[in-house]
Amino acid sequence: MKLKNLVLTALLLAIGMILHQFAPPIFGMKPDFLLSMMFIAILFNEDYKTTFIIGLTSGILTAATTTFPGGQLPNLIDKIITSQIIYIIIILLGKTNFIFKTNNTLKLTIVSILGTVISGTVFLGSANLLFSLPAPFKILFLTVVLPATLINTAASLLLFNVINIAAKRSGLSKIMEKLN
Image 1: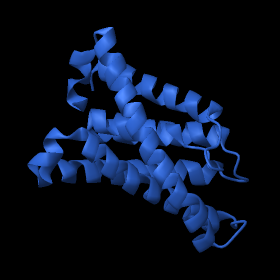
Image 2: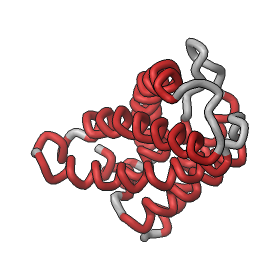
Image 3: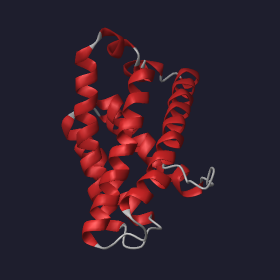
Image 4: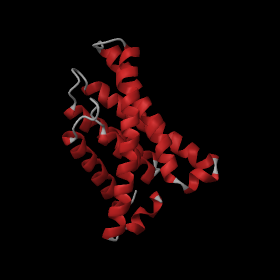
């Protein structure tokens, strides 16, 4: 793991955390910008050890700021499991088709959709096992996870484009070449 990759990953997660804290709800759903930045950081690194650290760090950060009653442990479980599955998905997407090797926007779209559904499912499932949910799992999945998937996918693509523009303007485009 190179120091510049580690620094860039830390910046991505810190920005995701700040955006997660201050983002207003959109249509009643607060976008999880930290989850979006976690996907981008994993896509950027494509390294298993770094992916585990990204998942653990994201879990700790979301656990520290959760508003879900008793959501600390489910957030930690959710981010660690989600990061591992997303790593596998990214590796599989990179090996399946030439399109995915050259188009990280398409790869990020797929990862954001699948990742948010996985994250929401793992979070609700672990919260249900550890405590109890305020409503039935199916209702929470349909009313919270699916709309969050749309919002987080749009947020991921927006953040990805902003990061690319900032990298080009700041002269960091050589570091970001892996993302394009």
